Length: 335
Image (cartoon, rainbow, N blue to C red; front, side):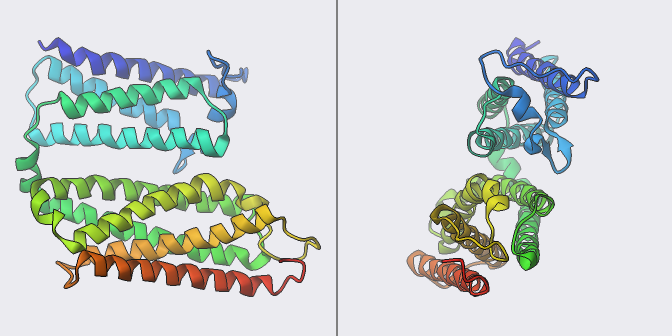
């Protein structure tokens, strides 16, 4: 019996109890407020619109994750035989859960602007479990990645396709919703759901990308296609944080045009410009990632490829601003 596996088991058990406490408190008929132990705003956070991801309560997702971790490491502690594939899946799942917890922390910091102490405890549990999984769990990673390269490539390509599709649909809906010159709460809710799909696709894209990179580090480090694609994924990630945590919370307060007889404030006008710019950056970058992923290589140097990519993104941003100004002409009160 290997008692070192008690560490993730205890962490997961604590996380499960915590998630169960949050869930039962929210569902209580007495409607008791969730009290934070260190003076946070737990009740505000766990009852916000961000408390669900793809329609599923976040605490239920947490309970499911912690239960799987408990089962996995209990089996490991009692030396239950399992294949390297199962171990690899468990480690990958822990890393994905860690990335999701980072997303939730950013939501608290930039969107809700309140902290839930219990949620931060859960994020800490997830972080330590991920660290344990990566550095303590015995796994022959490189041979396994080589063996399942084809499957990883397929999942990687599917993630890119889903990202491109969801981004395209989001932009189409964005312009469709602008027919009445504003973004309503219902319309923003639809866009939030599409945003969740994009985040899932991006997370899978990054993890599978790492899986493809590790067995070929020297080769890919000299590949201009890989380097440009990596830059594009990095920009998608940064742009996604700006779009979701800075712009999106303000969308419903921005009048994009229309009948209100008042000037936009400088702040509203700024975020209006940013909304169009981030949308343009997102869709152009996702398409570049998808196209590069479909090619074996590109007959260009990294500098040339990067210049072309940046030019495409810049063109997309300019076209987005041109369309914004076209809408603005319908409103003489907008600067």
